[in-house]
Amino acid sequence: MKVKPRYIKPELMACCGAREIHDHDVVIVGTGFPTMAANIAKHTHAPHCVLMQESGVFDARPRRPALSISDPCLNPGAAMIGGLVDVMGMFLQGGWVDVGFLSGSQVDKFGNINTTAIGDYHRPKSRLPGSGGANPIGSLAKRTLIIALHDTRRLAEKVDFITTPGYISGPGCRETWGLPPDTGPAVIVTNKAVLRFDPQTKEAYLATFHPGHTVEEIVENTPWKLKVADDIHQTVPPTDEELEVLHQVLDPNGLIAVYEKRGYV
Amino acid sequence: MSKVTTMKKAIAQHVHSGDFLYIGGYICRPAFSAIHEIVRQGIKDLTITRSNAADDFDLLIGAGCVTRFVSTFLSLGFYGLGRCFRRAIEQGIPHKLELEEYTNLSLPMMLMAGAMGMPFVPVKDLVGSDLLEVKSFLGDQKYKIIDSPFDGRKTVLVPALNPDVGIIHVQQADPEGNAQIWGIGGDCKYGANASKKVIVSCERVVSREVVGKDPSRTIVPSFKVVAVVEEPFGAHPGYVPGFYDVDFGFGFEYQQASQTEEGFQQFLKEWVFDQKDRTSYLQHFIDRFGYRRYAQLMADFDYSYPVSYEY
Image (cartoon, rainbow over all chains, first blue to last red):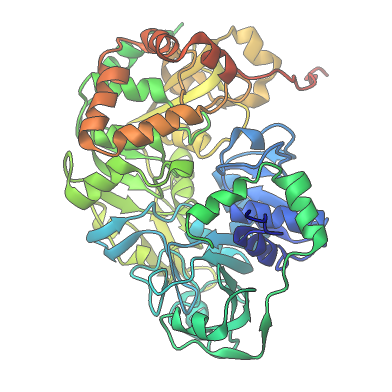
């Protein structure tokens, strides 16, 4: 008989995201992982963080997990509802957003994200949705958290198309382009590890490996020469408190398991 | 003067092949019944725009109505990539689609600029990305980078947009076109106001007196509006706050059908060409899925507290 595990990989990843959020942060979220992670933070160590969706919603109180940034459940109970110009213009471009949460079909070592096209832009192998809110969020939020699948196809030395700038081609690039100072990707949470960015080189390095994975395996599945932190250690598994919030409050029906089918195992 | 008319007449009179259309609504209040009528009337060569597009724009593209798209994003959300959108770009089916790509900050700001009569607007995003490297039908008019005349910093300017027609679906409007919404707004207010004329599709036509009881909800004033169409269930399978829920089951049907060109054509026949208007669409929905499923989509009621505007 199969024993139900204490947690599944997407739950661990959501907890990794949650731990990046500080109390009192203003967070802009997409659906799925980002919402789940931000809500775990809110229910544990960061009760004063506030969430918004680019479609125009501030401080929603959904009674079920939202399946899109325009989900009907985001309407009743929110503190404010406007539109894109309010959230993306007044709040994000206005400089008020601390954390942006993005996922990428392809992410490179400088934290650049591609959600536009795989292959040549004009003759794409696969046409993806496009920027939506990703480009402005990655450009203007103080810290960007990135969720990605960890293999040599999804991670890249250089993305096919920079939809959303990370550190572009290295140190100083964001500043040269005139992006706000002290902004940029903070972390890439994958299904195998947590990568952080070297303050000098702006290149992503291995900070922690998830339980069940090894440094060798992770290095092998990363398409650039992945540097390993001096204090490399295992990712802290979800705590009892985090799991209780997830299982009892945020996602009692286990909708997050849908990410297992999408490869987050 | 009442502008109340049918969708058939509103589209026939005000939307022409070759027009530039803003069509509002992302999952919340998509103008689906107007889109079906555009497809039915065989209107072609459209340029369309909106930040965040979903199954509604995917259908319009698949039906061959669209040549150019000022875009930021198109997906079926929970159901993944837009199949018709992908076929158009990857394989030129049913024909080539030209994309001018922006973002969910820059495009709403371009509509805002259009609404305000400004020629262009500075935005802080786009820089450092490949979105500046690709230009389509707008060519060098896609953006300009200047040194700000105020502080000398590099500044990106993007052009104002003024669509020929704006089409929005709202909760309620009066017969002259004062249109009211509540709930997630997207870029609806600026998109409609940037447009040279506006078609208002609504769940219900109400009197001018009802509008006047809560005028802060009005997003488009009557003088911009050329037609008002009462289309209950007009946003289905999207939702309208206070009226009905998003129809995830139907979203899945659309995704399955649109996997193939044949499936998509069959879907168009069943839900667009074989229906003469929104009433027959709704009747067909009930015949096909049962009244129970329709009733399940209907929203619960939890009224907000009335506010007083009196002095």
